[in-house]
Image (cartoon, rainbow, N blue to C red; front, side, top):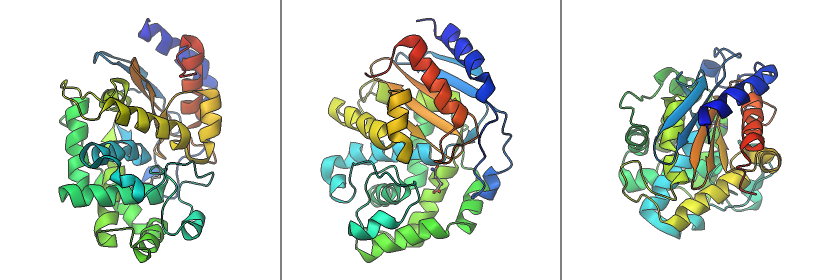
Length: 303
Ligand code: GLN
């Protein structure tokens, strides 16, 4: 496969969609990002990486971090996590409160905010410093020691964090959190604020394309755990648009309101696309479209 030719063709086809949608305004520090940006990278399972457009420009990873926190917890803890969080699509927006009361404080899946808070809570208990553990992991997997938190984004989210605080307190009332809510929120907002480029993220997600093997060749996850994370990404990674994402793209994917989406072709490569304009469900308009073109051009959907 000529990755560079595929990326160039995707960039040409997606051009009319770039600039569509809205930047995430509920986190004011994200609202200043330029709408017309577009970048895409492919990291082959062997570690070689290709890119187009703004593929080396850092952006806020936001909910893409949820795929990595899930991997870190499953790597250390195995299946016990699933007593505290489900693995069904929610059919509701990523920050919705509504299912939590009906379902006794057990979030539907690890990729909506409530579920991600539970995963970060567990990572905090396991490591004593969830956000730094994730940053160190991402630096190692991407090969980029410069990766850092964005303090302004974390502060902005803390300031406007009532919804996430409500989710956390609600779960605490059901006994589904082990750490104090303020500690948990701090680590969650820091993990979401990490800045990475498409290049960094495609490389960092490589272990999901290599069936659980890290960039240094050591095994992070069992083959089965890697498969399961990919399955949950496919069914829940783009929230209440996961059905449409599977229909159009047909790959495990995890989006974030910074406008990035990571996708995985198991056994072959990991991809990351970035364009800040979001649709109503919080997924990048040009990003979904680019991945749609990618699987159309290559035939590499999982179906
Ligand atoms: N940090 C964001 C939040 O908690 C992440 C949401 C997202 O990227 N979908 O609201």
